[in-house]
Image (cartoon, rainbow, N blue to C red):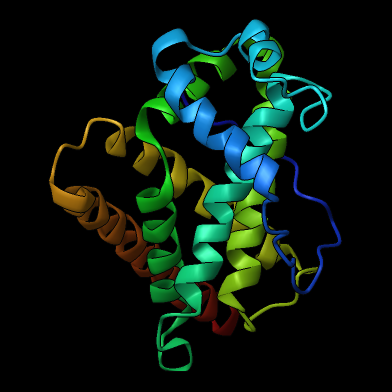
Length: 208
């Protein structure tokens, strides 16, 4: 399945603080990692795990909780990197890599299967938009304000790159997903090259 392009909010926060998981939430995620890969996503699984209090809306809440856990991994990785010496593209790359390393592949696979139905597109869109928004907020991109169209475009392009890389990652058996990270790096380099070429073309067209 492919991830749809969400409608990002016109006004985005300068920084999104990712709320850490409580002990109960973290325990639920770990139990979901044990059950979902074998049974898939079912409401009775959440019932067995007594997840109603943490996930009152059922599976959508559980999916958002797992996404939140993966997003937290990006924030942890950021604190371990030489942030001020890194450009925005490299920051994005390293944050996404950290997210993949923290993700539970078979649970993610089952999640995409569950989300593949057209009637669930809005759920996927909302979760994906939140994660990509957090990604860019963590990257601390200062080339545009969150309210500008360019910031919206960057988030949508990042979502497209993250989507295709996720599908590659699901098939990757290399050590610590090195092939996935090489694939991701190439996609980011291709986008950077395209952006530079387009910028030069626009500059030339406006001066002629």
